Image 1 (cartoon, helix red, strand yellow):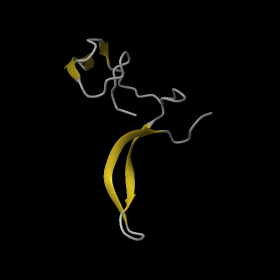
Image 2 (tube, one colour):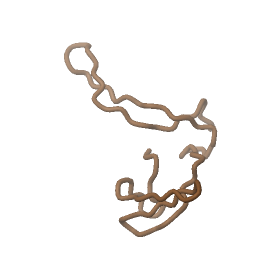
Image 3 (cartoon, rainbow, N blue to C red):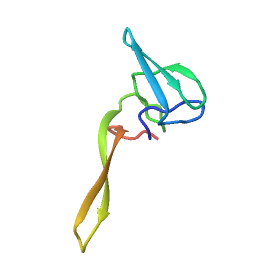
Image 4 (cartoon, rainbow, N blue to C red):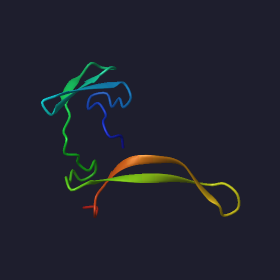
Length: 83
């Protein structure tokens, strides 16, 4: 799940933001959509707002039982997933 993605075309990379008086306006370079970014993130599955930032490690098994972490990704996590 990206931190910001275009709600129309789901573009994650070609986005430009502008902060004016605490309101962030985002413009998608792919489809041209302009929207105000919601600064209160929500769970993509249950729409809960009590999410927190978390880093997720992508583990790789290199040799034997030795693990390496080649990539970490920023994710939003809930204290407990709602059904």
